[in-house]
Length: 220
Image (cartoon, rainbow, N blue to C red; front, side, top):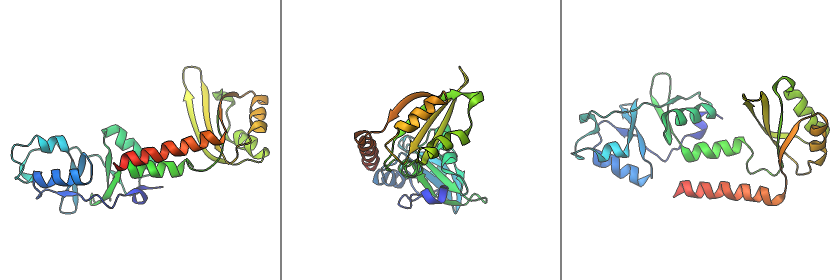
């Protein structure tokens, strides 16, 4: 999943010729605190609502002010993980997308990014989630996949985190089944530490409900 798949077409960019007042109106209309600014087709930077409010003359154009425009962006070939990294690094809720000529293509909002991430991680698909850990020197992805497949299950989503303090690899595995007793027993037989199991229907429904609630919140 790359940047063009996540662009929010509903949010327009600002232009250097736009007034501060126009910028505030658009920010309020689209419920965003940051918007990209363009010079023609070229991306200039990101302006915030606080910066606009701080202007003394909202009737003046953005170009007439010396604003400390930040310039977070990703190229149109960027993966969703690159977009999320840019959002975290720059502490922004929208990430502009440009091509190699620095021409503006569109905007990825927090909502569209989260929706894409949820799809990528099979949030709404039924299935159990197992958290296990194993010493880093003993970890192989092929063994984890084999354990699942030998128990008639498929891995829908898979995450790893290396705990540097004790050199353990912590695995979070989303499966396409809720019957994980055989899988858990196999992990334990191969000396994995089973840290958590989420496999009941209620948990799955709660996870979906939380995701839907977050989407509704972002749409407010």
